[in-house]
Image 1: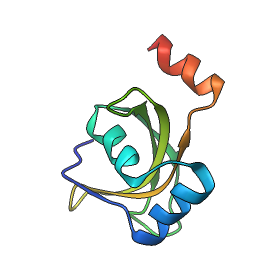
Image 2: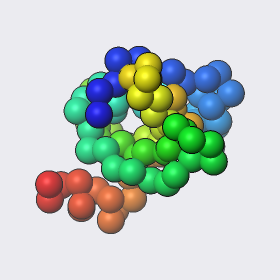
Image 3: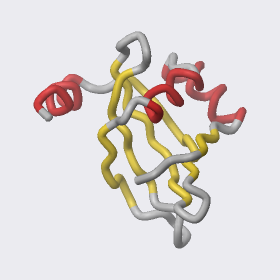
Image 4: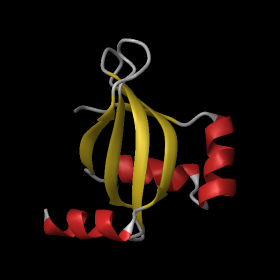
Length: 95
């Protein structure tokens, strides 16, 4: 999956900071650091499928970032991000 552009709407960025204590910058960093990406769920409309990216920020924080991928524009639109669970971290470390 090729990602040329990363978008994080202001409303989502606010939610990430208040609910999950993750900054928009940290979420973008995960997508820039060659994360492990997996299909999460089919979108409600065609071409709006949701993917999960599992990786680390520049300072080593382990995050799960969920985004809608727009292949025609090679754009990832961040919809959520949180710290990885213990199970996710173990799985991430094994690969």
